[in-house]
Each structure stands twice: as C-alpha cells, then as structure tokens.
Length: 369
Image (cartoon, rainbow, N blue to C red; front, side):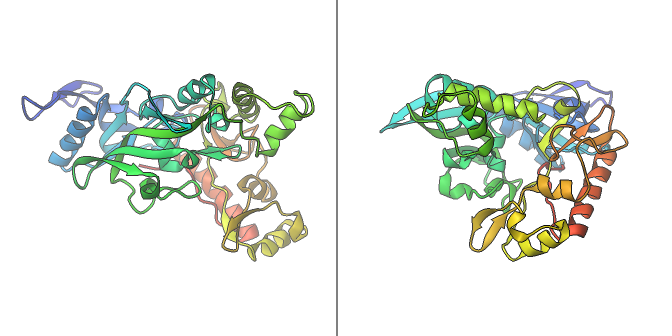
C-alpha cells in the first residue's frame, strides 16, 4: 500500500465483490461548501449500492472510522482531516415515478443534486418541495437534517428512505414514521446517528397542487410582482426562493465569500415559552416584541438570527479569515483561506455571546466528523 498523496488503490476481498477506487490523503476542503478541511486517510466515491457496501467493509476490516459525505454543504472538517475512510455517496438512481391515487411518488438517488430534483418536480407541476429550491447539498442529506426553508420541510413529503444499516449489514426501507422527523432532526442525526447510510429517498408530491405561500418573505415578494388575487405557479415560487436566497447569500453555487459557507450555521432554538421574558429582558424590549413561533407543548421557536444580532454580532463581523456573512446573520463564511480553527473560534464567540446575554444556547447545524 502506497502512502504517497492522492495515489489510487483498488480494493476487493473476493472476485464476486466490486472493486472500489480508494485514494489516500485526499484534501477534503474541495468537497465541502465551506472549503475547509484537512485530508482523509482514505477517500472513496461510491457510485452504487454495491460500492457503498464494499467501502464499509474496507473500513470495518481495518478497524477504521467511517464518515459519510454527501454534498458537503452541512459539514465542518477539522484542519487535521479525518483519520479513517471518507465515503462520498454518489448513488445516481435514475428518478422513478409511481402514480398513487392523486399523488406521485418520486424516488431519487442519494447522490443527486437536491436543487436539480426540486426543479425536476416543479417543471412537471408536482407541488410539495418548491420552497426548498436553491439549497446546497444532495438528496441523501435531506432526510438526515429534515431540510426545511420558507415554510416547507422535506418531512412533509418523505414516504420512504432506503439506507444501508451498518448494524445488520443489510439494506432497509424506512417509512416516514420510522424516520422520527422533528425540527432539523431525524432518526439519522439523533439516536441512530452513524448507523444508516442513505442511498435513495422517495417523496410524495401533488400533481397540479398549489404552491405553498406560508413564509412572509415569499408573500411580500409576490405582493409586488403579481396582481391582487393572482396565485404564483410552482416555477415562479422556485425562482422567487432562489432570488431571495441569493440576496441573503444562501444560494447553492453562489460565488464569493457567501458561497463558502454551510448555509445556516445555527438552528433556531426551541425553548419553553417562559424563557421569552428572560430574552426580552436581555434585549431591552417587551416580551411581545420578541419574534417567536409556537412549537407545541408550551414551547416556542426563536429566530437564531435575531438573537445573534442583538447579542452584538452584526453582518460582516469577522475574526481572522472567518466571518458572519455580509448578507445573512446565520451564515458563517470563509473569507478566503480560513481554517477550521478560525471558524470554530468565531462560532464559540457567537454561542457564548448569545448565551451570556439571553441564557439561550445555540446549537450548530453542520456536523463535525
């Protein structure tokens, strides 16, 4: 086995098992939207379910940790990299459609670009995910985080997740209930984190359905672009969401520093409603002036961006080569050449500032292998 950087190595333990192309000491920064991260000891791009299995066996046989990388949009890799096997899942299952009553079940492979799948659905008049346009990442990451934006969550449409179970070493189909979806949460990033490798997702969409207009930004957008009473098409909503995301520096493929981010770095905290008075005191305002959204069972969701701004962290605030986006308070960006250590220092400063002022702890969204 060669230790030279980037050298390819073919691996298979048996004639009937597929060969996988393993590379060594591969920098991970180019595979993440933050453009940050040291090298992977071993790196493989799994283009089929058989290759997913083979890569996991390679890691298991050598007692190496395994990290599954999707589109790289929700990950912060350390400067030291990852001393194990990084598998980039690129299973490109062709999109399959099945009519079921008044719905269409659309299956997509984990390695497909999420924005491409949204556009595919919109162009065919399938409603249900149009507000999730422009989000960086691949299909495989959508159920893990329960991706959501502008009034929609993928949990509203997901009916099945196909995944490889590392415990049983077999493929399983998990239905909606088994996925245990919650706000930015699922079975895959909570109690069973690291157990499953998603290879395909099936979404239930509504042919001819109306676009969702639950979010204030979208309502304001169409109030100035459509006649009174006119309803936007799915494609108009798709384009509007991408336009709004671009203005906020949160659009997939965006250039410049805003394109070097992990999107929203902090989750909107869900807290007991009694905490609102404490937050108002820290902000110097009345409790009814604190933006809040019902979250059930006596809980409310607070906008993390509002908390960050009122804790004194303005857009463009920088520490070294890491900064808060000039367009969106929730996005931490790499100004160019930033290290993971610099971004973590900025993250810690924001978390400590918000907690010190309001007594509310911010939880980060990106995972750290």
